[in-house]
Structure formats: C-alpha cells, structure tokens
Length: 570
Image 1 (cartoon, rainbow, N blue to C red):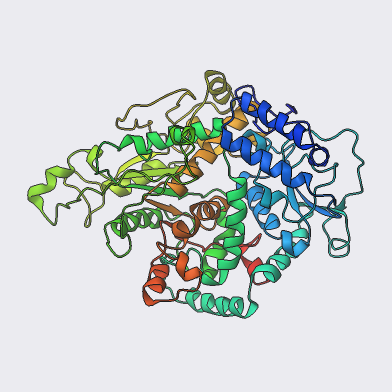
Image 2 (tube, rainbow, N blue to C red):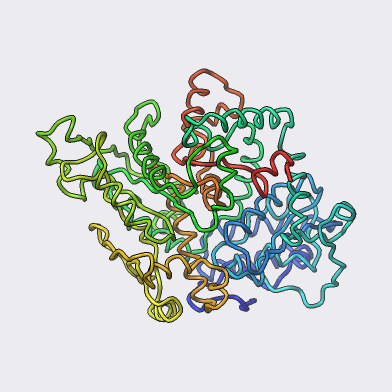
C-alpha cells in the first residue's frame, strides 16, 4: 500500500492494493474469487466486495488498452474549491476528449484525495471499453504506481498538440490553458444561441438597479442545465467519503440537529438554515456580480442575512416547500445495514413561528434561543459572526421574537482537532475563536456552545481567516492540513445535502460546489426532475422558477473557469 500521504489516524482504504488494472485484467476468475474472500475477511461489507468483484470481472474481459488518456494534474498550492472544480470540468469532458479523464492529486497541499474519498466509481474512471495503461492505472484507484511500467511522454494541454497526445496533462498553469478548457466546455455543453440570449438578458438585468440580489430560481439558469448535470454526475462519482470522513460528517450533522437520530422521537423539529459567507479576495470579482444582474456588494452582510430570512420564510410556504426537507446522506448506522445511498429521515414538520407583531400574547413562545430556527454561519472571515448576530438582534417584522432576533445564530461547529493538532494550530496562528471538538466526541442534543467574539485585530480573528491561506497551509503538518480539510468537506456535505436551506455565494468556488452537491432538487428546485426530462407543464415550470433549497444570492452557477468564460469573453 502506498502510505506516502496517509495520516496515522486515517483508516486504510479498503480497495487500495498494489495491483494495477492492467494486472487485474490478466487475473483468472479463481484469483478474483480469492481476492474477494480476502476483502471480505478484512471486514468489508458483502455489497462492497461484490461491487469490486463485478468491476474486476468486467475489466478482465477487456483486452484493449486505452490509446490515450487525459490526466488532470492538481496544482500543488491551489485551493480546495478551485482544484476540485477543475476536476469536475475536465472529467465531464471525457466524451469530448474521446479518452478517459483521470485526476492525480499527489502532492496537493490539501493532501491526496484518498485521504478523504473512496476511489471514484467506474463510469468516471473508465468511460470507454478499454483499460488504463499500466503507467496511469494506479491513479484513479489511489494506489502506488507500477515501478515496471513504461512511461510515455506527457504533453501539456495546448491548442497545437492536445488532440494527438497519448498522455495529455491538464493543469491550471500556464493560465492560458483556461480559455482553451472553457472553449471545450462551451462546445460540449452549451447551445450557443441560448448562451447569447442569456448574455443579452443579463446585460439588461445589470442596468436594472432594482435587482439587488439574484432571485430564487436563478442559481442555476436553464441555459446551464446540460453542463450542470454533467458535472453533477462527476461530483457523485468522486464525492464518496471514506469511513473516517463519513464519521466526521455524521458528527457534524448531529451537532447542527440534522442527523435523523436527533429527532427520530418527534415529528416536529426547528428549521436549520445555513449561510456561507466568502469575502477574502472576492473584491476582485465584484464586476462579475454586477454583470450577472445583481447590485449587492460582495461584502454586504445585510444581503446574506436577509437572504437567510427569506430562506426561512420560504420553508413555511406550502407552494415553495410542499414538505419539509427529508433527503439525507448515508450515516454510519444506516450504512451498516446495507442502506441505499439516500437515507429518508423520519417524517417531521416545522413548528409554528409566531412574531410579536402578529400575536404579542404568544411572544413567549420565542422566549428562548432553543425555540428559534437555527442559523449556522459558515465563514472564515473576521467579525462576520458579530455582525450577523447584530443584524439578527435588530431584526423586526416577520418571525422576529419578543426578546429580539429571528434565529439562534451559531458559528459552524465543524472545528474538530486532536490535542496535538490543536497545539500546532495555536502555535502557528496564536489562538482559536471556535469551539474545538475532538474527533471522538459524541455530543448530546443540547444548545450549541457559543465561542467568544473577537475584534478584527485580535490574533484569534486572524487565525480564523488565515487557516485557509495557501501560504499558511504550506507551513502546517500534513496531519493538521488533513484535519482542516475534513472540516470543510464535512460542512459542504452536511449543509448541501441535509440543511433545510443553504444560502451561498455563487461567486465563490465553494458556493458552486455546494450547488452541485445539492443536486437537481437542491439547486434547481423541488420536483423539477420531470421538467428536465421533458415535462414542461405549468406546475413544473413554476417550481423551477421558485428554485431549490440552495440559493446563490449574487452570481448564478457557471460551468467554466471564470464566469466570462461561458461567453468566451477573455
């Protein structure tokens, strides 16, 4: 097993072996049965072993090697959302390349993908009836390379040579690769007359200053559906958490009251709304917000807070939300019972919320924070929590309580570090302004603790913001980098797939990843799958206009490297 990038607390990958697919293709059925029995003896479920065995048998029947392969090479120092977005874009172009597209994350600052995810399912790695050559067969299986395999010349993606190269490396450097990549995305997924119409429409929206934020139903525009569905399919093939990652996802879900077991005994639970706030260097992309037809500022916290209130109101509208959200993710308990990929939570409904204006006599029903809807703030920005709490305390009108405030506002309780990693974090950044959980914590159903507020000049505020700085990341141990990355993966998974509402910035890579993780119903709208399949009834079209649980407040989802790449405007 290749352990070059494996942290000590990471479980060994159940499918990691030193056998490349080219060797698997030569195995006899008896050898495959022997391997299957060995896998089952290691504690794997029969279903997983059967899947591996079926895939191996399929590969064994193939005799031809792929004549060319496209390898997406992760840039060692680039961000999580940025590199994962390139993975999705390039892999979704496999049929356009006419070759399998695989991703190599070895040496990435966030650690290899094998530290967080199981190997991608076969359709992603083997989209054609050929087997990967020995020199690259180990990449999608997250295994060590075959030391005896020949190493053909790798060609960097470029206009002149990409169509004929047998090993084509796609990276983000040099920058001029992005326009070519985006051109291929346009050719593969867009109808250019529709894109031209969309560009004209957004131009008129941009001169209409009454459009402050992006409306519901515009987070994924219809002209982007083909590209969205293609990248969503790749996301589902790659975003397959390891047992250790899944356990952390389960713990976070319990903390924010979204795990099925936290409300299985009752049919009523409070709504959970999440808001993702990404500021940082996004001032550089302020023009993209205006061009998309929104007139908010990238750092306008009022817009994010009001978006959260609107998301809450939407949950109580029977047309926009016909039923409370019941889609979950596989939890450890369900997975042990061979559950399917989607877990249905116990039936429930939201409790009534009575504002002091509507019924002062019942204002005491909102006396405690525990009775209020939960607003989880996902952000690494200075002073965001204090400002959001101040906006909430001053809120009036719909859903505002007698004691002030609409929500029980908490910072995302995802900060999970061992004692060793906590010490290293404090030594590097100076302080921690989040509640720190241990990887083995099992928190009871109790009010979430609130971390102390810090000023913008405090070391802890700087730490919160700096932990995602690439320069700072490079100074951390691999173990701490993996721990921080798992926090992010857990947040994206729980909030995109389980939260009742998720307000994001489509102007950020993480916001667009959240839309993809939410899928069709999460990002486009409740009950619109039939619409995408050709049912254009008035009700289906209306639901599409209403949008889904996940809403971008600034920029709609786009399939290219940069928003302007959708139009070829470089």
